[in-house]
Image (cartoon, rainbow, N blue to C red; front, side, top):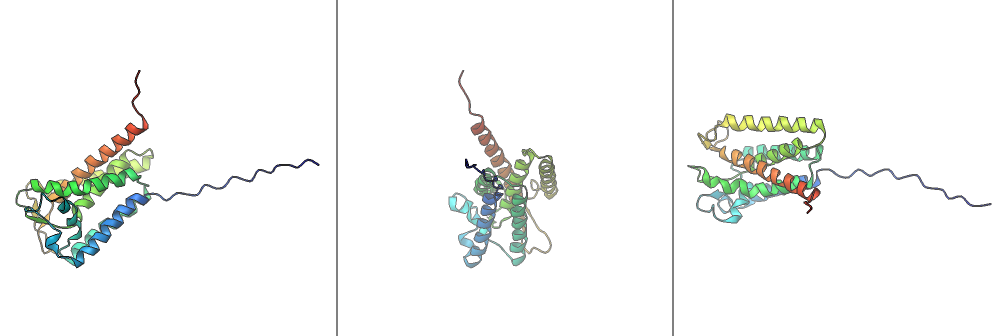
Length: 211
């Protein structure tokens, strides 16, 4: 009797983790914010005198001026991490967020009257801008609509803050002037980095050919 080859049933596809690189960036920012609690703020904060030092383009995320300041930024960071997982932001989005991080603080030198800055809010706005741009380029209509809503909300928030009139603003409850200019520099840096990342990915997918 001739044997019969039995083909095993195909294995079910194992779902791949989504947004892992994006969540890694969020985790890195969270760790730095916690580590910064044990370090002198003057060695980490952006100041006009240290604006030319590349390290100060990264370290302000570790400076928080109150527990409320830290908790508010931690909540925003958690929301961005969850968003990245929910919409499956690709590694290119994480690279764009990392690129926007130093650019957010480098641009603060253009803000008149800003002498010192610390916190996560600028980089959080950069992350929101990156996420919005990437979602607008996604093939699923629901993701594009969510990206459009995020972009509209971010634009409305920036406009309502009048950062071009008063880069520093007093808000009751915070106990210190809020550098709303960092929200604008973060959003611009994030949008620009996201557009560059999307353009680079498109060029790699469709390389130029000679006739």
